[in-house]
Image 1 (cartoon, protein in one colour):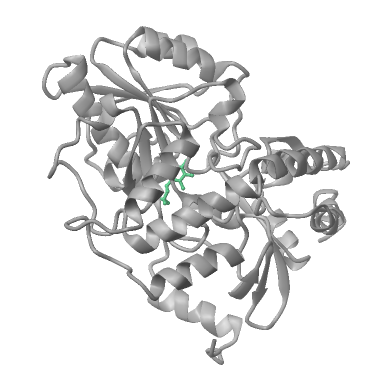
Image 2 (tube, rainbow, N blue to C red):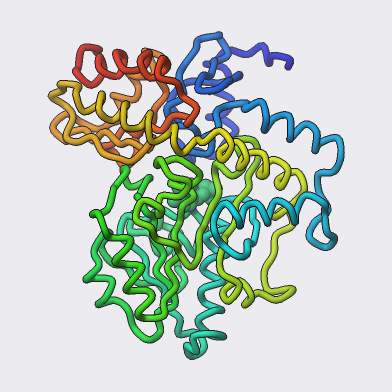
Length: 407
Ligand SMILES: *Cc1c(COP(=O)(O)O)cnc(C)c1O
């Protein structure tokens, strides 16, 4: 690949000048990657401990996924759903089998899949549950993150996500996370769904009480309410199981997937559900020009096969346990708590030590790319293919920063 000939500084200046300022990236410009490693344009090497918010569970430039993508690029990329394509059916079948669900509806980004789940729940509410027209309610949780569309930010509790973007869609209620009693109180005959993340990643890796998901599932079942799990970040091996809900033996009515389903190569997302729910959609109800395109399906198929065949959930469980234990052993005046599951780990910085951002900047200077989430938390979520040696490379550097030996 030809180089741009521009320095990191010049490339950042271009981005600042010509792009909307809707992110605050760390000042590093990446031009190459492999596995858990990335290189900037000057050739400096970093370990990627963010994995693009868990979209890179299989590692950067995973050889099998890249080969599948290249092969598909020589055959067929897009048909729209106006016609069938030969990659679509087999991928839908495999995805359903892996997820233990009967049917899927493919989209591209996570937010679109969440929107699809909302539409499915509402239409199921009217046509199956018998809720009166336009009365359907969906219960959500405080500190949720489900994406950035206007409907979704409308039920966010994060002021910045909402400020300036109203008016918002009605029909959403909010309860505290991990609070089954609040869920029971919030349910009414008009409730069609409870939308929840098994672990709140963006909120700072918030792990609910043991048993929360199981009890919430029971409340949903008793009240004929759909349990809709957003596993866009927690799914596909990240927490040490294929899906985080498996830790509690819960099967959701609607499962929402994205991110790593595209193997870090292409946006691939979707919802999975029983036929009874999915069959509310009839031709013309819902769609996406790129959803289920053959390139996405070929990449998604290989991305999923890599997770299954290389047993990445087991690797995440083992590596996660090791990394978490070692992080907890670090003596630091700045760390309030280390928490998480599998390779989704949050290190909460005490407010008296300032925000997490300067810690991320110091980590970057030592060759580790991690990103603060929700002001006080450094998230460590490397690709699941990370080896013990690679973790051991990172640990002393993380320790230096957390112990405050780097200024
Ligand atoms: C990233 C994320 C989304 C949104 O996905 P996009 O692809 O950015 O639209 C939704 N829910 C959760 C839990 C996520 O982590």
